Image (cartoon, rainbow, N blue to C red; front, side, top):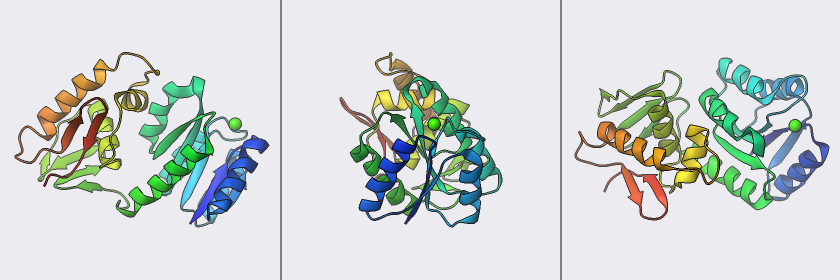
Amino acid sequence: MKILIIEDEVKTAKFLQKGLGEAGYVVDVAADGIEGLHLAMEVDVDLIILDVMLPALDGWEVLARLRQAGRQTLVLFLTARDAVHERVHGFELGADDYLVKPFAFSELLARVRSLFRRSAHRSEETIRMADLEIDPLRHRATRAGHKLDLTAKEFLLLTLLTRRAGEVLSRTLIAELVWDMNFNSDTNVVDVNVRRLRSKVDDPFPVKLIRTVRGAGYVLEAGE
Ligand code: CA
């Protein structure tokens, strides 16, 4: 597995390169957005760890151009704490995961492994789980062939739950990734929207996909 790190902070880049190398990954490093994008297009890379604030071309632009070129390479964004609200933007651009700086290497490694596990189950474009199909490029979701009429946020929420199927996602994490909300803010918006999402995705169908895990959050799983 080959990982490309696009990061201008030399210390962070070296730390990541060393740790990921020791974990058995082949690692390339680019120090600015142009060089990073060039490598991402020219070299066969499995995952890109992408900093947002970069010289020459920022991380958003790198991701946007990559996706415009039809590249579905996994992208994990590294964002500064004060850029939490921008993660929604990255998610809409097609990022696969986020990690907030500063982070523990153990967490980064867990995220990287989880991304690779998930991508093994994921087709290039359409995400499928049971009879649910999500087309991220066209912003279309269907269940058992019926088009689901979702708002933009409901679509993001469903995509997040489906991409991370089987993993219990906390309200806080969902609020951060989908709603531009900071840690410790009121996560009631998550419950309200999950309820609405269920009314469209689950209520009309005999098999329910979205499950509440008391005290922990929500998980999307294929039924028995
Ligand atoms: Ca930076």
